[in-house]
Length: 110
Image: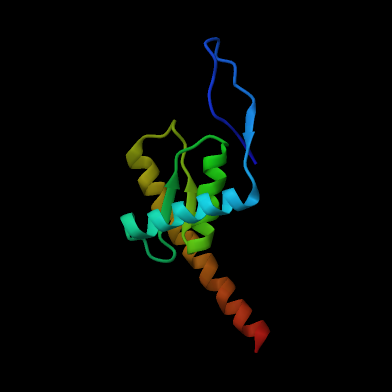
């Protein structure tokens, strides 16, 4: 995974700085710990992610998956009240889907 650390005076990106899987794992773990400790989120808590397609977005997704949170990419172009309403609806739908999948997996495994 690579990330751009800085841009020069003309706006061109400096060369990528590559990180190892161990470094990515450690960063995702720190994000997961922060979400759990500072925001006190519980399993299936919804995390809205405002980000372009950067390393931070992938690391946040990984952290959410690790902790059992529902991550939801958020668009900058929407107004906040609409996003909150839409995300609550999406979270409800996600919970219903996960509940159905759990019931199905119980049926198949017994």
